[in-house]
Image 1: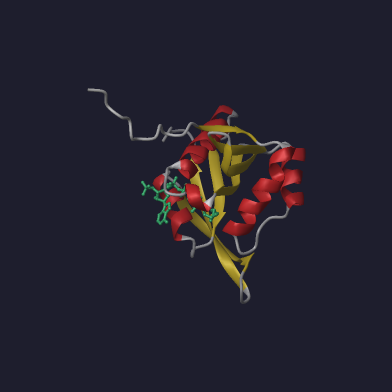
Image 2: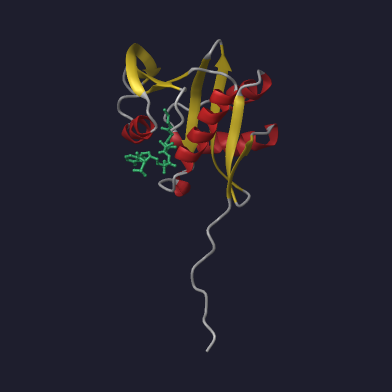
Length: 161
Ligand SMILES: CC(C)(COP(=O)(O)OP(=O)(O)OC[C@H]1O[C@@H](n2cnc3c(N)ncnc32)[C@H](O)[C@@H]1OP(=O)(O)O)[C@@H](O)C(=O)NCCC(=O)NCCS
């Protein structure tokens, strides 16, 4: 008796370099994910100045992105975002681990990032990757009313996670 395969094959998920032609799609994801999104121009500038800009490619579909600067021994994670319909599948963790590996390979000894204390999902992601809070930047973020503080998180890169 022949069996019928009902399960779908898991989609192929890769982290690949971001290109200029990705930016309109990235800007649309950014707009749907953040109340105060980056403009297309900011993404173009990130590519132009040579930041580590990567996208999460889900079987040819752009599922999210991560951007990092490196220099003077420090990596700065500047943006990590996953499209709503692709969340809770480990994609943000995948791109973060990729960026941390790249930072380590580039000889950086620490990684830093800022997060809104109200962003529980992102804060949990970062803490699960070994980031710890080392400070607060008062009024760092635009908010609906006034400004919101940023928690500054740091991870030492000598130990792989
Ligand atoms: C934060 C964000 C990037 C997480 O992306 P994701 O692909 O869904 O995350 P992952 O599936 O890789 O989850 C990794 C970990 O993050 C945490 N996490 C993710 N979503 C969460 C949620 N809704 N609630 C609580 N914790 C969450 C968990 O620790 C999770 O680990 P677990 O699955 O073992 O519990 C995504 O929600 C997003 O794009 N948000 C909007 C943009 C944003 O806020 N970016 C961060 C700016 S600092």
